Amino acid sequence: MEYSITASDIAKRIGCDRQDIYSSASYALLIKKEYYVEITDRPLSWKKDIDLLTEYDNVRKKFLRRCGK
Image (cartoon, rainbow, N blue to C red; front, side, top):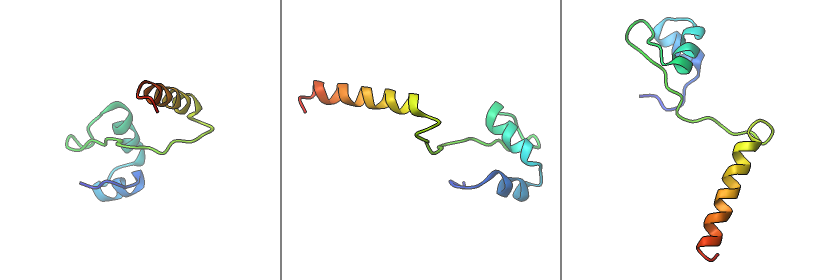
């Protein structure tokens, strides 16, 4: 199992189009009736993911207040 690989690398290794990789990752579709791609982690961006980061920070602060820190 590879833990860090690009869509282009996957497409070359199994002989398919990059679009097949993106479809598999987005919709859990099988590629060549054998493979599927799963996104396990993605980097966060302050500009793109500010809502998620704000929610995380609010929950973190609540935990710290409840623990007396």
